[in-house]
Amino acid sequence: MSYAPGFHSLWPVPLGVHRHPQCEPLNALLVRVFTALRATQTLTRGTPPGPFFASDDDLLQRVQLAEWQQFVRFVVESLRDTVSQANRGTWPPDALDLRVAIEGMWFQCANGGVFHDLHTHGNCSWSGVYVVQVDETSARVAHPVYGEANGVTRFYGPPFLSLAGAHADIGNAYLQPPHVDIAPVPGQLVLFPASLAHQAMPYDGAADRIIVSFNASIHAARGSNRLHNYGPA
Image (cartoon, rainbow, N blue to C red; front, side, top):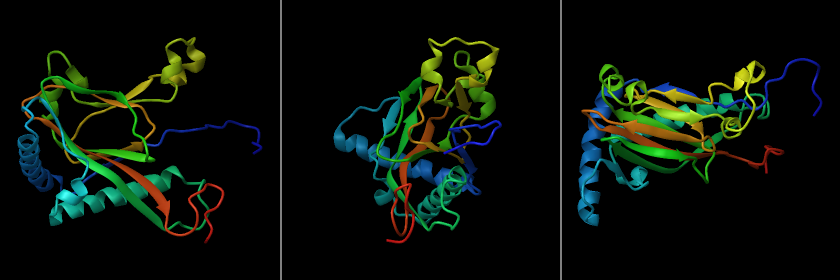
């Protein structure tokens, strides 16, 4: 492909931030449901309780509540919106009839300085984190050790790995900062490319940090998923 003279910004990193419109009653319900599921899974497997817990990734099948189904629709609609904006100019001009496949969905509880180290997600194109519960912002950021980083999700940009040994001056200042912190806010859904390196920073608070995580793949309802052919089969 040839480019016209001028400035071109290539390979941007898309990130979608959404807010559930009725998060308070939903989150209160999810805390009760997840507490019961945690107790059941812990008892069944005989694992002692601790500051960290991760459920199995079959929440779509295990939770059968109307409010939960509405939450899943919120996730799917948010994914459609974010993915459509991320691919604007790349997809064909005619709108695609998208199919969003949730490949796995689970919840995590953390406290007492627990963190999730740097990682990416595989076998999917998009991932997401929905915040169910966390300390109020004023209390969270007042932590004597972690401060404002207490319980945030930290995303690392693509240049991060090369910055460690690279020369840095004002000419490549646009690469700074190498990471972005997204503060946890109940009802907030953050969508990001599954290949984007990220981590959950250490969290300590009066309330557990409870999140829902998931992986998703996006498909065209008809035709091929290949980049060179979106036409009918």
